[in-house]
Every structure is written in structure tokens, then in C-alpha cells.
Image 1 (cartoon, one colour):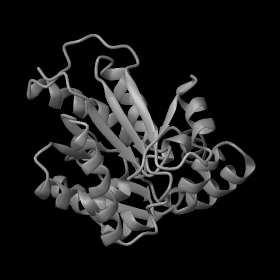
Image 2 (cartoon, rainbow, N blue to C red):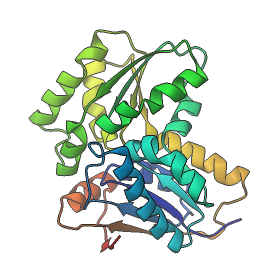
Image 3 (cartoon, rainbow, N blue to C red):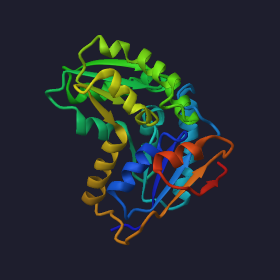
Image 4 (cartoon, rainbow, N blue to C red):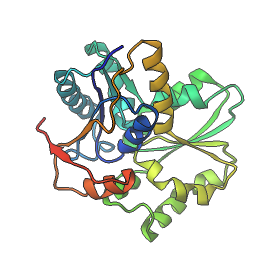
Length: 263
């Protein structure tokens, strides 16, 4: 057993879609969440910048003696995960592998992926899907506006509806079975995406897949927290002059205490 905390980080509020699923499935775990709102968005930054930023955040979480780190960000997972795993002893898990393990099989034929520019440019989703099933046909699309809209809380208004309608055109023309929300901000648009694509397309929420994977991982490696904790977590931002709190409180349906940290 391991009663130390789990570290989770993202560029902003998107990672809370992962955080919210983890606290549902692992209610005893203590969590430190970092939203790097000072340097949001990550999607347009270079790989070198993403790696450097990720190192700074991981260094902070390691200094807090976490037992495991979850990268709740598609961009940082696709561009920094492998390098981080070579540097640090603490287990670090990104959102791509758990999602593919749970959602791609030999019968999967047509898959759509939406993500930031950086994530799509990396080709990491496609690479790992092909390793699982080389016969899968993949349609990838950059949808850079969505993360910024999510940070502003524009997830159900007319602007959001128009953006989703435009972004989903390519997928409606092709009979995909599943669409992977490759950025953790995107589950905030899940309702609108479903309206556009219909009930026959399975929408893959990476947060749900990560929570399922993490629960199995902790059990397998004898790392569960044995102390009963209720809402024992801290949410930390690198910049509090943002709309994070408003969006986060609506997402989690509760008032939040936010800490500002320097990285």
C-alpha cells in the first residue's frame, strides 16, 4: 500500500475532466492538481517548450513526494511523456496508452481523433493505434479553438455550436465508429459532439479511460491508499487571473479553494 498523493497536471481546466473521473473511481486517493494557466495554451508551443514546461511541473510534484504522476493533457502526453519517463523514477502515465488499451481492438475499423495542433502534429495517437490494430482507418483533425473556448466557459453557447458543427464535417462524411477526444478540454463539448455525430458514434472520453486504467494500475502494483479520505485534494494554478475557477466549479458542481504556485 502507498498512502502518498497522486499528482495530476494540465495546461488549464481541461485536466479536471480527468481529475473528476479519478476521484469518482478512487475516492480514497489524495491528489495534487496543477493547472498551468500561466502558460496556457500548450497546443501551439514547440515540442522543446512542452518538454521544458513539463519538467518544471514534474519537478514540483516530485518535491511534494507524490507516488505517481498523471499527465492529464494530450499535448504534453504526445510530446513529453517518453522523455520524462527516462528522467524520473516516479511512474508517469499519459492519457494516450490507457485510452487505446481500453478502446481499440481487432474489430475497430474507423476511428476519428480531434486534438490540438501539437498533438496531431506528433502523430502519437495514430502511431499507438496502429500498434494495436494496423488495419484501423484513422481520421485526425486539429481543433485548436476548442481548448481556448473551454477555458472561457464557451462550451454550450452558439459559438461552441458553430465551431463543433464545422469541426465535425469531416467525420460526418466518413462512417467512423468512434471518436477520441484527444484533448482533455474536449469532454466539455461532448453533448454538442454527440448531437452532430449521432448515437451510432462512440465518443471516447480520455478521463474515464485513465481512471479505469489507474485503478487497475494501483491495485496491480499494491499502491492504493488505505486511509479513507473524502475530497482530500488540492487544486493549484500558476496564474489565478483567469476564468478557471468559474469553469471548474461548474464542472465539479462545488465551490473550490484555489492555491497559486510559482514554477
